[in-house]
Image (cartoon, rainbow, N blue to C red; front, side):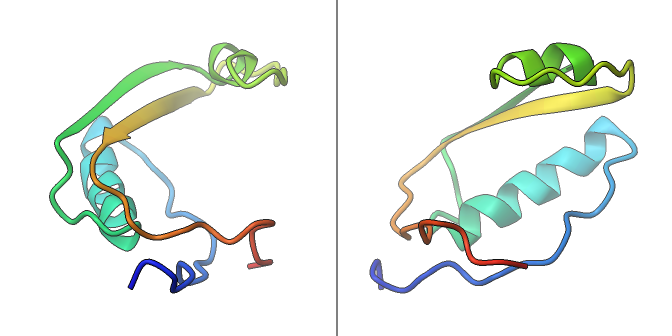
Amino acid sequence: MADEPMPSRGPLPQVTTEADLLPLALEAAASAGDPNPELIQHITRTRDEVTKTTGSWVHSDEPSYLVAIRGDFTRQRPFPPSPA
């Protein structure tokens, strides 16, 4: 059912430890059509460092994460994303 839009989701739960990332990444992969992705990796940096990778700058030393997931994703993300 690749033509079905992804379900809308509310705010993400707060990540308090790196261990919180894997269940969230697996949930995101499954909702995108691959419940068993090939690879999930992350890095931990400050929010300031992470946001610079996206072209924006947020001056904060709070811990932040970049997560990369490799898999066979079949669902299309609605564009523009639907409001929460």
